[in-house]
Length: 166
Length: 166
Image 1: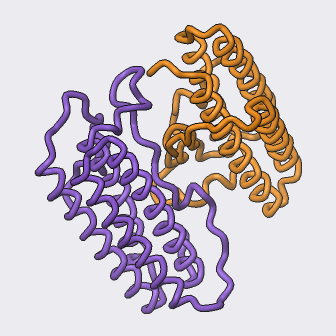
Image 2: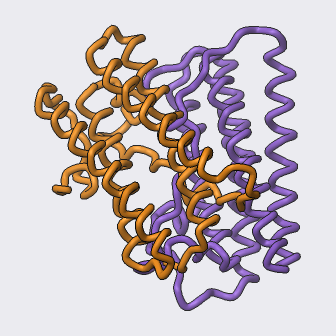
């Protein structure tokens, strides 16, 4: 990973939180449309945390101009296919939606850890470690929810980030 | 794949063209920033085609209300990693940017073909076949450009859609 300046890092972090907020809102709406209220509520909470985190980073940045990250640097992965032709509907299973979110949170956590490990600026390192800790909390929250959710007959192929321990 | 109504299909097609337009513009800007003018020009052309296609579908839809597709049904895949830690910069190689675009165009072509194959409505089938043909043209254009572009030492791992013949 190229080493970051603080503004580059903050721009990435804001874009990542915005992406997470958008996806959690989408997942919450989908769950609600399928009358899965408990899972919808979890995703609304995750959405709220992402928005709060985004806003707290923005507040820190103030009026400084930040670079614009490229979409593939912060977008969530598209979900892997479960089986054959059903690619468009399988997220209707709450279990798979939770695993999908977990994979993306795990990827964010690893990103922040990698930035922290390579940071030369102590402030950058401190921030990256703090953010990695928040993502870790999200993974743990999703794991708890996964434990209470019935596993469907068709579940995701093993994307490591959906299953590996934090 | 679930069978589609015509409005569902048109909503998907518009979202896919919009996503392609956004990504091509981003790739064009990136190439320009790295003074790779020939490749930038290709991506600007691809952007223009995507915008034109989106607008022609919108014109056909008129004022009908369309459903809102979910992001993972039309978003481009995030690029696979080339090697280790450089995941954030490898698209700077024009060859890899072209292969990335090819993988996504190929996926769109397959989507349209699958819709055509399962369509019961003849108008839906005709449209899906027409759109598949346009995506095929895009893949062929990218192949021609790939043939003229030096292959870098680090290139994408073999994602089938980046290399399989149309």
